[in-house]
Image (cartoon, rainbow over all chains, first blue to last red; front, top):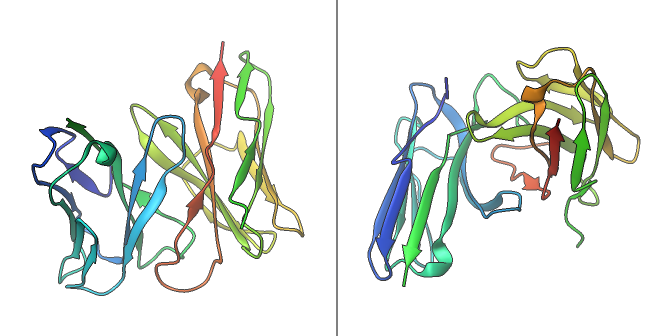
Length: 113
Length: 114
């Protein structure tokens, strides 16, 4: 059983559309990270959020950490084919030390031209 | 700055054999974590080493072990390989301290068990 539940599992959209990926848990996380992974490569860190209610924007990507530190969302505006990939949320629970991350199952995003 | 390097990239073994995977972290990073990635289970935490000591351990059988050397390089060993051990094994390095320390992943070792 995944400690972090991601939804949806798969998302296929046209270039220019917006999308949102959700990451939810019943546990409290001291920090949460979002990664993107492409075939044959390791996950690449997109952002880290550590404060409840925090919102971070990176160009067309907006990340939000829930007030209770149990959930997060990733919103992409005007998606491009280069945004295609497996999006993973990962968090460190308060009882775990910093080097241990719990991962969601991932959301496969496909953006077609 | 060189990234995390994992060797080998691909490995084919047969059941019952053992295997050793290697991970060289980013220079200056003292924490190395190992993960197993499979289509069915996703990314599962194996263990983490910090300054040559195992600091965290996941829920894997004792056939999975690791160690870290004084230069922070880490190795992972799997003994008595089973078909279910076929997976992508990823290592990640970080400074090891502080909330939300980003983990930097290598590109993994693809292990196939025949």
